[in-house]
Image: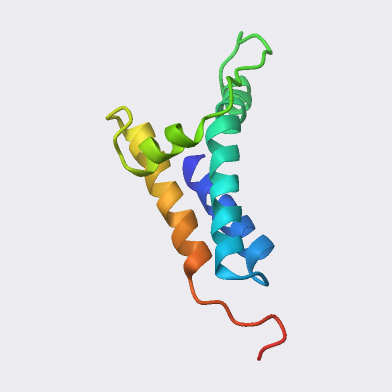
Length: 108
């Protein structure tokens, strides 16, 4: 599930930002990362509803992360567990995807 979400997010990042400049691509990558950190608990919960019987249908989305929260995730200084380190790796992967040299959409 995590690999699918991460891959889908990187593909979305590349498709949405490929015709933009590097600064805009980086900003879009950070916005997508922010959305992922904020909304992914609900996506995982929907998945859990499919595989576990008896879970109540509910919202598990908390308050949006602050810029400082994102910096701690990307800097690997948040909680020291696999989930948070994975989010940090995803953040860096999105930024690197955004900075990867892009060909102009017209092929020039």
